[in-house]
Image (tube, rainbow, N blue to C red):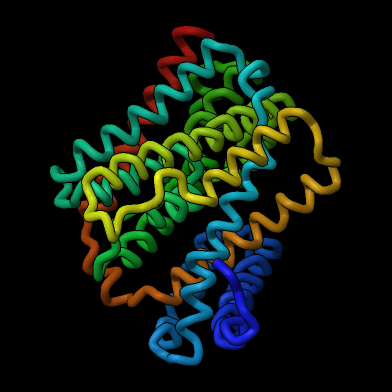
Length: 329
């Protein structure tokens, strides 16, 4: 989307507010250890009234959509084909199967919890792949309605809370089960939702566990592109022509291209590290903007069924990966 000088002027106030909220969230995370995505959502919600202000709404929408896509696209520089070789075929299949089954179960069981298939896809994808980042990417594909932003906000909050609990509990579980450092890393990386929590949980056990967990988690991140691609195809088939998403969303195409180029080591390490920081900044800003578009009253209407669905999917993924590690470790 081109950002002309005139449009930039309209975007600036709302985008600046989203950036301020994101910076505040990062400050709380850095100084008090709070999950940054959760802080971004919670700090953004009190400013929901700004999304109804014509001077602010354009910039907030820009942050929630365009800035989000930039952040997701840049995630491509965090992954490469080498991940497959480092993980090994057995555990690569196990992790990929866990991702796909979690999403499928989310879609198939959503009605049991009083939600529609779209919420099941959103919840399943966020639990299975990479938490808030996946939720934002998948939400950009789904048909828009009056509860879209509320469902997205609730999903981001619930998976972030679940990921934080998992960061504390799963290392204890891995120790009780008797996993060695490598197997513990596979378990943690294959189950915890957010990258930051995976790193925290892994390195709290040992350096080897942290390194393996991060590797496994990044492999799950690579699943984002094919899941978004297939999701776009399905939605395109079932949606009216005027509302159908593109066959390959541009941000997914950029993700794939960057991941492919990164597999050939064409980018200097300094650039990759910078892009990782930029990607995270974009995603935090997008989450803050989503919070700023969400009414607390509407959030309360989402219901306990959504909590039950996210909790059930989290439990399924943990049990599935644990059994797989026990069987093949």
